[in-house]
Image (cartoon, rainbow, N blue to C red; front, side):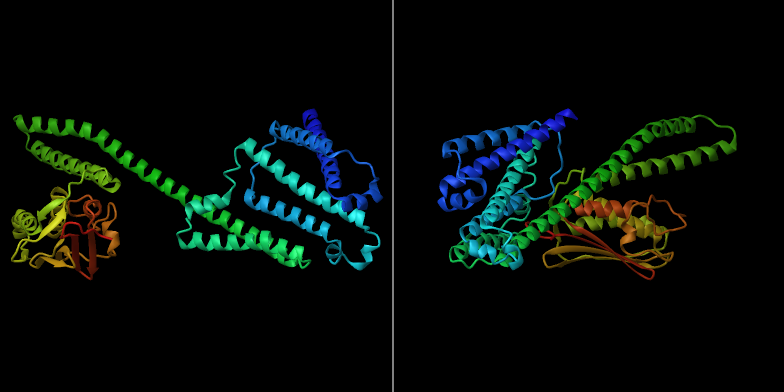
Length: 463
């Protein structure tokens, strides 16, 4: 408490001493100012050298008292705006000091007889001095707290919005025009005795509005950055959680599968034991597949899978994948209508990832298509892009929209009577995005249509 009081006393004393030094220096420079003020405070004043030395000492003491003070605060005003405002105040006081008639034009007539010119000059000098010292103390405080550069919002704004972009260019024009009016037009009009105080105040208001607009834009940008960081952190946490949990589950699951295999090799007399072992074998295999899908989905969504883009024959890969599902289609009485171009269709993609995507689409058709119907698959090239489309009639009604089917753990079979984890289309979409391609799903009634697009020519990329 005592330190705070003593610090206040030091600041008040140094401010008063500095004002006395500045007043003495101005009186030494201007005879007119000295003669006018001498009527009120007397003719005596120290020399210019003494006034300069006293001001330096007072400014140094004031700066040290602020520097070693513990009263830290968060600045909320752009320092560039504060400096321009203080400079404008000093210039206005200087202009009105030179042109007393212009200054008294803004003073009501009933106050002119109680406001002598000496008092008015002392008031202007005091206002100019206070404006300059406030700027000085604010600069010292921000240097102490290492926030001077941080609170130069103009620099940060132009860093985020360079002048070669429309927002930065427009803001630069407004800022340059305002400063041109304040620090070139206003002095010229003041010399001519035509300074307009409302115009100066309007320019200052515009400068303040632009500065606070920059602050608002920067706060929005910072908010978006924080949201993006939080989103990335959440995605990373989810991926790590899935990976770790899947790894922890896989270890005991491997032991279960191994012991089931050992039991199947032993002679079992009871008939029910064969049924129990069959259930264990089936469920453990399904759980193993689910864990593998979880890990693959986690890696695909976060881009942790290696991608080897090369030129491949899309027609050949589609034909091979379709051949693997001949038995599955025949078992469900599905007729595959495969329409391939007469010439090989070359594309830029990762062969392993594309195989996984096509395998998922044909597998879904084999599981969910209405028995006794046809499944259409075709390849076409449009605008330098190669497309593979697969269409089938769903056995069960699809009550989900197009995008929902590619979300995690979403299955077209709401009753979940078929095998599956609900991650297939999500993994396929993530793999296509990793390769720079796309996967689109369209549902119209019971008609399910999937379209895979990849670059057909080297050097082309999706936008």
